[in-house]
Amino acid sequence: MIAVDSSVLIDLLGDAPGADAAEAALRLALSTGPVVLCDVVLSEVTAGLGHGSDVMDALEEMGLSFSPIDQRAAIRAGEMQRKFKQRLLQTTAPAPAPKSASKAAARSSASTPAAPSTDLAPSTRALADFLVGAHAMLQCDGLITRDHGFFRDYFKGLKVIVPRAP
Image (cartoon, rainbow, N blue to C red; front, side, top):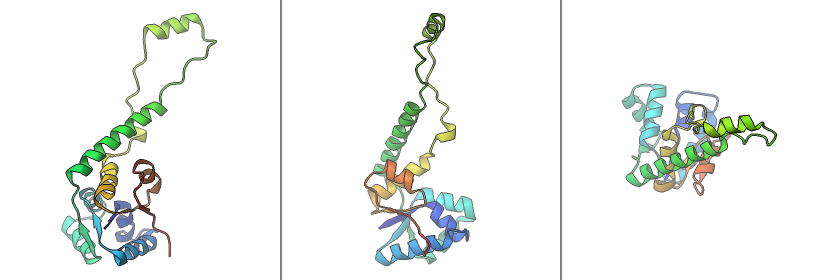
């Protein structure tokens, strides 16, 4: 069973430039077994393309089915997002002051320690991405997505299938 990410379905159903590659990837996956979408993907596709029942009808007509996220995957997604935020905080921590800084500046900064930055908005991944990845990793055998870098980085061992133009 292979999961599919919303970006691939939006490309296909929205007739985007990547539609041919998305269609080829889905056809290949369907020829080997079931292809599913989770709750998050269904929500994102519906938000991007229109009425939910119409979207689900179109997806089922293509041979896709719905596979809800289970408890294990939801927990893993939360753990992975926490690791992502910790990693982001580590990479955005301020650099130490140069050794040539004046003693007054050193005393000033020592008396008022800076709080760690919590402004993660520009680089934060939505929990949805972690839910999609955890669903694919724990409940499926792979994920069709255009966002291969993120899923390979955070879901080691997940088979990532990237749509390619035929």
